[in-house]
Length: 269
Image (tube, rainbow, N blue to C red):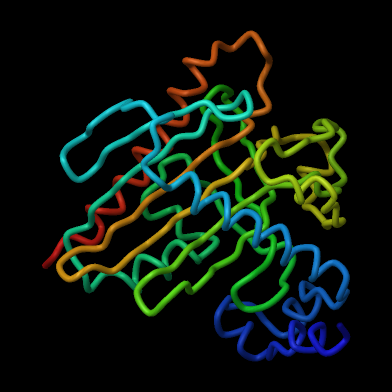
């Protein structure tokens, strides 16, 4: 309804500037005012959350891949012909709950724990907890740099439970190198979500390889004496089919190990 659209748009530019450390001109340029696109993005994010909650459960189809220690256990499963990795992580510092969430919501937060991270930026804003981000990284399989675009949203599920989701769709960008019609094998509604995004010169010149996020999500819960985090990851590395799936799984495993490093950042003083 029109009323709902108005509510979705009732986000203060000043608040966005402060939260994202950007100036008002940039905030206004990035803020989406198309109620249809906002509604569609909301639907994709809601479906992604449902998938995150489903795949975060300990189900029989997961197999144990690696027990780093008793507080960091990694699983994999096959789903719709793709791999989904899962990490159960215990961070023995309940006071770190808000700081962990703030770091993960920062488009550049990855530089604190991910060695392959180059930089993050915001490509579209729907509201203060919701937008499209672009992140750049050095690629696992290739020596050059890669990037992805993903819808990113924070859900406050309760006072002490938060979910964060990232999900790619076939977002339209000027990129002569990566012309694949990407289909998300997990989040179905993402496949009709095709907004157009301005990109930087190196992408327009076909200089970067492109990755797609089938689904990445964090479920973060504050318990009495620790924070429990469940991390789900499924990516389309957009690599040549001759790379064996075990090697792709190994690449995902290395990404999960980066998330394990978050625990060390928030060790109790």
